[in-house]
Amino acid sequence: MIEAAASRGALGLLRLFFIALVLFLYLPIAILAIFSFNAGDVSFPLEGFTTQWYERFLTNPTLFNALRRSAMVALFSSTIAVTLGVLAAFVLVRRNFVGKPAASALFFSPLVVPYVVFGVSLLVLFTAFDKILAESTGYFIGLGLHSVVIGHVVVSLPYTILTIMPLLERLSISLEEAAQDLGASPWQQFRRVTLPLLAPALISSFLIAFTLSFDEFAIASFLSGTQATWPVYLFAQLRVPSQLPQLVAVSSVIFFASLLLVLTAEVVRRITAKRYGEAFASRGLA
Amino acid sequence: MSGPLLWLILFFVAPVLFVAAYSVGAVGIFPSDTGVVSLDAWRHFLGGGSVYMSLFWKSIRMSLTVSIAVVLLAYPIGYFLALGVRKRKYVLLLLIIAPFLTSYLLRVLAWKVILGDAGVLNSFLSWSHVRSPDEPITWLLYSQFAVMLVLAYVWVPFVALPIFVSLDNLDRSYLEAAGDLGAGRWRTFVRVTLPLSLPGVVAAFLFVFIPTIGEFVTPLLVGGTSGYMYGNAIQDLFTRGTAWQTGSVLALFLLGVVAVLMALFGRFIQARSVTA
Image 1 (spheres, each protein chain N blue to C red):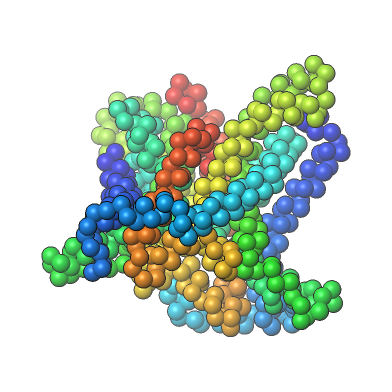
Image 2 (image 1 turned 90 degrees about the horizontal axis):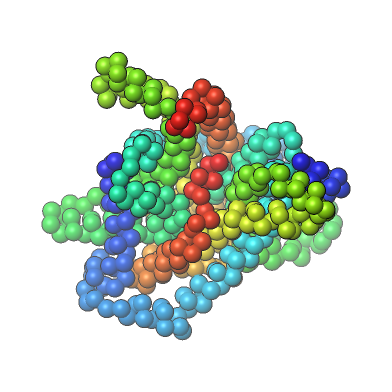
């Protein structure tokens, strides 16, 4: 098959190109990581090894506050997104109804709407709502982490649905029917049969939604108000040159942490997809 | 079924409708909003002459350049992984995709640090005596070049995926049949493989083109004034001052452009290839 696709020479060229692209992708990040241990500023020549930038960010309370806010937002938004994602995936896989194509298009449309458009739209909605609220009651809610959570749920939802759907399709419906025949209530059936079988997809969709939210800047920049999340804080601090080495250090840590999270999610998803594929597929439904 | 649908209607559809209403003056937020419904803001924007319209076309040109470059870079990668590798192709694919799944801001930051006048690249050049320290290459940062380079860098991993999927699903017996019928490898590629992978190429193109038209983060960090894009105009209109009505027109227009693109080419995009 390979022989039909490329000659030996062409294959060598393709391999070289692949290696070059991998270098292009990882080199900037590697440079960032190397300079986070450099005693001088972020330019050549390297001036010796230090961990002072790491020590400095570990004792920087505003930076930690921003990280904590992002973690909170990510935790809430991904929990909601996974819950809603399960419900949506069920509807899309197991139900047939009028308007299903329209509902499905709506579920996935956040994937193609530019974040800047979505961000300002929510800003307009919240501001207009607050104005009406203030005029009628004297109170208003204002922007903050809650508005960021709301926005992040919308953009994570398609990803969670897309991660849960394939597994749900492979799960034979007969397992649920068997539970029903054995006298399980719909809740018991969901809690004892469907949910445990779906667990791997839930974990990996949670991790995907979590990383997406934790790093998200565009929407958060419009909606966070005075409660800067980590990317919003990072962006604001980039204008202060003396802060740069410290930010590079914390950035490297977060880069590798999120890489680890995402790879875990991916491995969990692939392993279970394979296992379920063998155990449950091809019973008429998959 | 009502939960997710309700969430999207309240926080996704309703906001867009609000922006639409605001763009024609039907909703008031600031004291300066007159409450008079009119299409003036739209007329001004669409009637030519508006700086924002020329900015829109500039952004389209930049996005087009980036999208074409990215597809050209990603195609050989997809081809190599789908047809040139026997073992571990998913591991290698993950190697390409993984950067996309990590922080966007950090990847842009890395380039800002590399391309600056006193950045890694320029300081390396002067340190190794290739160039004098007084003459850094200034067009590296804060230029259209910087914006397009960084956008290409950011999107290549994501775009390799749909191309890989379309080539990986290709029925290999077609390639053998073409060979048996006397076609050489190049002819097989041009007449069989390439046409069959075109849907993946179109999807890949749209995956970059659509999000980059509205891009504002990358230009903000590495674009300077010459790299300023349409998305920056929207952001500025909403974050500085109260010209939200013009901003609403711009945002809605961009959404309309995306909707038209999706209506024309959306059938090439399978939402699933996002997580394939």
